[in-house]
Image (cartoon, rainbow, N blue to C red; front, side, top):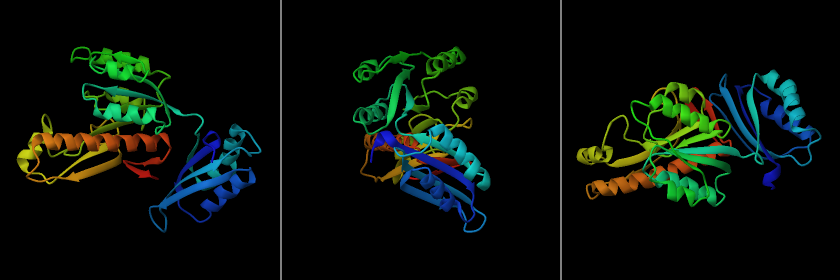
Length: 287
C-alpha cells in the first residue's frame, strides 16, 4: 500500500440502514480501493453512527476537489453527515509547547525522527531556555518566549504569531502554563495535553508525593484535547501502572513520566492519522 496515495474519510451521522453501502459504492464508482474500514454505532436503533475508512487514490476518475463535492451531494446530504477527507501525502504541521520537563517532548520528537509520527514539526516553543540544545539536535527551531503573571497576554499573542499558518496541531508536552480561552478557541480540538491521572484527587504541587502519602495503588496518565474548562476536554488515551508500598516517591515519578511519554505519543499519532472523532465531550478512537 502506497502512503503517497492513501486517503481517509471520517463520518458522523444519525444511524440508519444503507450508510456503509452508500459510501463504499460511491468510492468504488470513482475508482477508489478501500483498504480499511471501521465503524461504530451508539445504539442499534436511533443511535449516532461513526465511520473511518482508508482508501487508495491512484485510479480515481476525478480530482480530489471534484470527489469531495460529489460526495457531499450524492451521499453526505442524504444521510445528514458531518464528514471530512484527509490525505496522507499532506502531513499535518505540528508545533510543541514545553516548559522544563523534557520526557514527553523528547519521546514525541524521537518517534517523529524515526518516521513513526506522520507530521511536519514546525517548531518548539518554551517559556524556558533549558531544552534548546536538545531540540536543536533534531534540526528544529526553538523559540524561547518567557511568561509571567504580568505579561501573560503578550506572551500568548507572541506564541499565536509564531503559530500562524504553522500549526495544524499544538502539543502541550508538559507546558506548565494555563492557556486562555481565546488561545484555545483558535485551535478547536487541535491542542493535545498530557498530565498525570490523579486529578481531581491530588490537585496542585507534588501530586506524586500526595499520592504516596495516601498509599495509592494505581498511577496513570491522561491525554486529552484542551478546552476552555481546565483539564476537562475530551479524553483521547489513558494508561495506568499498579504500584505498592514498596515504591518510593521517586519510583512513582519515574513510572508516571514513562506513562506520560507513551500515552502522549499514542494520542498524537492517532490524531495525525485521523483516527479520532470528537462527539460532545467524548472521543471515538479507531486505534
